[in-house]
Length: 107
Image (cartoon, rainbow, N blue to C red; front, side):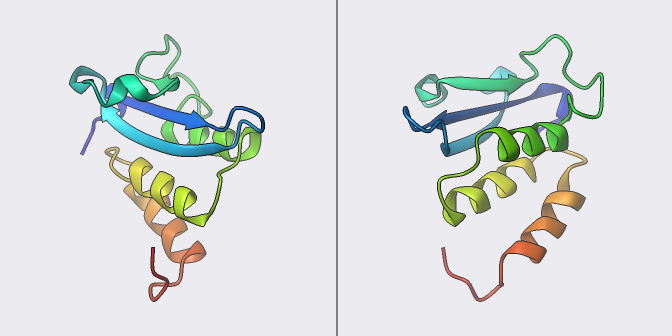
């Protein structure tokens, strides 16, 4: 689990459409060579992180969903799962997983 105050959300998007094709959540202190491959970020690196409901993990997920969208269901499922790694976000991310994805649906 990653503390919300330390959570850094990183993503890449398609050049033309800006649709998100990959997203991960990491502890801001645990960045490495893998995280260098992501071109966009939000979260603990932002001065106003956790100051409002929209500057929160769920607010960021809503913003990314509405503004960028996700390339396909696999990317969406991964994104929800990644947000579920943030402490205190397991409730909405877990409910969203159950609502959107059938347990028998394969990756």
